[in-house]
Amino acid sequence: MPVLCMISIRCLLLHQQYSVSVRSMFRRLFSTSLAPSNLHHRSYRNLQNAFTLPNPTLNLLSKTCPAARFQTIKAFRRFSCSYSQMGEARRPLSVPIPAVDKADRSELLRALEASLGSAFSSEPLCPNPSPLIIVISGPSGVGKDAVIKKLREAREGLHFVVTATSRAKRPDEVDGKDYYFVSKEEFLSMVERDELLEYALVYGDYKGIPKQQIREYMGKGYDIVLRVDIQGAQTLRRILGQSAIFIFLVAESEMAMVERLIDRKTESAESLLVRIATAREEVKHVRNFDYVVANAKGKLENAVEVVKSIIDAEKARVQQRRAVV
Image (cartoon, one colour):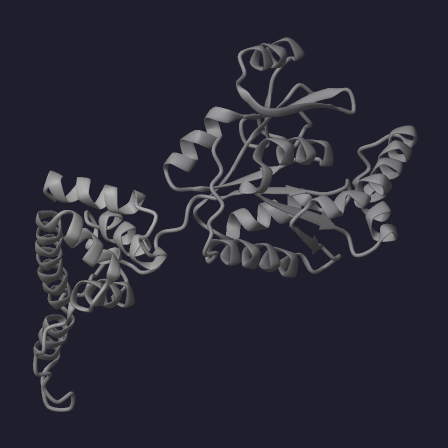
């Protein structure tokens, strides 16, 4: 816009006798001159009327500076022309569309694309879901290991993180499959090197989750399953927040939970008493989880199906959880 016009407009805006409506009109014009598509059609009509109808402010401008009034009207005409051209460009083309029951699909598609002014995209409307971190926890005696074993058999695309522990290996356990068995000294070295996502001292032994294992498999597109105790779940909730799924497994009743602990025959009487008392307290932490799943005796398949359904529902979320380790 010419410098003379801009100076004249500025003088006009400082004049005490100009109308508020015209001042607002000019401000909208110059603030949108670089992006005329933002100007509302009603504002455009008001602006047009201001230049075509008698207006005391423009008369004042004409008296004080006739050349400025001429330059202002000339600038408006250029703006009006460009605004009209943009409106024409946005209007869909008028293309005849053949009868749907007679035209072949490709012909109909081309006509529809031409009429709408753009081609139809073949990109998926539902993008691939992000890899999930699924934290499974619960009190002792609820069958966490049984659910995870069955889930491993029933669903592909899951990586079950192998936890590192400093406790001694049981006769039926395999190193690298059930746990990574390390000494307490080795475990504490891993802590110092910040190699663990979380770790805790449980019943006198250390347990922790290696970070590298999670990063490697998430990079391959796998969902990550973490089997942790209640203390570990609390730590992971602080670290991961709402970016991970937290599932709480329970038995069908307290009695059933105690019977399972007794039937394991892996504890002394004193240790059994501690585990039962601890499990009673751990059940109260269910409110800190996203989902609760009952693993009733003889109904393991049902519990696994519920866990699978939770994963499927999370995959279909509009706002995906995105965990970063």
